[in-house]
Amino acid sequence: MFVVADTTALQSKTELYAELVRQTEALLIGEPDMIANMANLSSLLWAVLPDINWVGFYINRSTNEKNELVLGPFHGKPACVRIDFRRGVCGHCATTRETVLVDDVEAFPGHIACDSASRSEIVLPILVDDHLVAVLDIDSPLHARFDHDDQQGLEHVIEIFVRHTRLT
Ligand code: SME
Image (cartoon, rainbow, N blue to C red; front, top):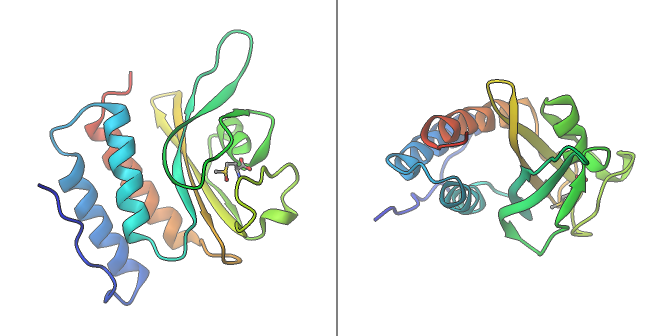
């Protein structure tokens, strides 16, 4: 059985992400199912990352008619289900395929407010070769909660997720 290690005593983001990377590897090893791994990874991130109020995945469900993301496994309050690529921080990430850091969600044009407590947000793309599989979205009730250390640490976590999970 996997037990989430206590990270409350860790002082720096470097230590926190080193531990998160170790736990992600241990959690996902040997399991290729995408939904199971998204569910467990969102649970782990929820348990380990301080000062967040939502964490989860939006899966790329684009068709020939429409480019859109659909809500996947998450922790936090119920959220909007479908996000057009032209809308919100998640849509911006899906379109640019780059990580988006938003210090103040109210200043981001078209931000979609799922929880009025959210103040800042990070959204990272999950890519396999040239294909966008999903985005990982994390919200915080604090202004400017996420920085480039978070981005780097979370990109490492996503690399582990992609390596263990069957995504094609
Ligand atoms: N804020 C996101 C929508 C998803 S919720 O935060 C869970 C956005 O603007 O795309």
